[in-house]
Image 1 (cartoon, helix red, strand yellow):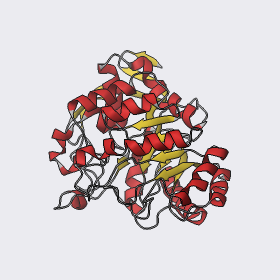
Image 2: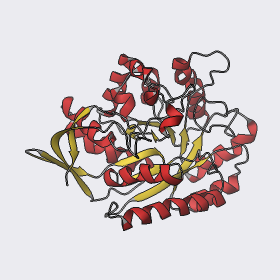
Image 3: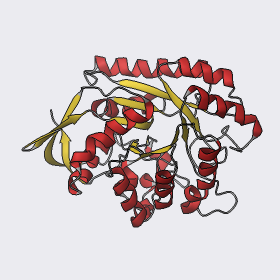
Length: 352
């Protein structure tokens, strides 16, 4: 890392949790992610066709590559980028499928969604993590080293408080880690102090952390554009998540959970869950680390920890930001997309 006057240069980061969607939503997400991140991990809960099989992966990979080609033609993508994929774990997943996925060089793990979790497109996921029918698949993942990525959040259908849904799911996490001690487990978008404490305690568990859980609280969720799953939590939780990101522990790595929706899907009676932070996440993160005098730990959190967790190379590619205050646009795509930190000021921006 080089901090030189009004510029900062560092290894181009990894974003280990991104919802790329399809069509124009994919275009607008990748347009910004590829400028800021060297490695991008795509989530499998696609509305049109969840990524559950090898055929699904081939279909989705072709769509991603088509958008990347478009961005190259437009001069937006001018450097190398690596797109990796999570596969959705379902009751139909078999040990043979695990072997197939392990052979695919761009498959980074299996993604667990509780079937009734209050998040986008969780239907068709796993109803019972302890089901005997799932055990051979989990054993096979453990044996062949294919990581398990989990959305640990219980359903609100039983009357459970929304802001306690992640903490409630920690019983599942503890059981999984103890039952399968050699399974490489990632808790996606850890958002509470209780979850951070559990991750420190469990030997085979790591977590991705998001920019919004580091910088915002449930008070901000009065705006529909800050409604996400797991939800924003208390100021105390935010501080604990931020402290974990800056701890230098290999258990915590960057995964921003950028989840784009059209504005009409957010500004309505039942807003879609998800925060589109692709255009602003990196600049905000550098600002947070600088404010906490933790820039010396930034590169490890944003690339080193993820490389360790998923056996990825540490690329030499660098990115430079310059210190220049700017105001995030209210919206993009002719007003159809509202970004994270809309109309807020940021201290850093991408150097031209």
